[in-house]
Image (cartoon, rainbow, N blue to C red; front, side):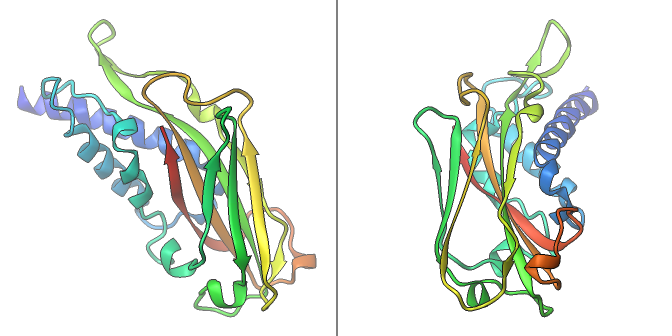
Length: 221
């Protein structure tokens, strides 16, 4: 009986982790290593926080532990916090549709650290919506509080910029088609990516074949 309970909950963790991964597909080329197992482990940690439901059907309420999502390490070889060391702020508009990423007074030459010499970089912004997962006695399985939320992901990319000493303000915005956070048990994820290239800005394309790193930098509930 205990094994069945554990397997049922572990299956929910895998589904939740897969939903999170799909939500961040626009910058999946910046993930490396065995990050997925870390997401599953985090899901189990969140699931254990359910003190109401019985073991075997405990809910996975990431909206109540959204701060933990910013701790996921997607790239152990090039940790985001080691690569990027500049102040930034993330804002959600009052209508819950638009997320703004602002990096003031950014100087890449001293705020981006990469083991190899590079000529250019670009910043990416991905916004997504993640649902909580709750066990349904009727269906005998875990269901999201709202289906197909991974399809609501929106991404935007800055132009390729030179790695020089010029100071500039970088502002990126991404907007959902409809207001977010309209259903209890949902979370808005904000992920930031940094891409590095040995090519000059004029030579770079948009084929997502460059090195870099990423992180969930903010969550709104």
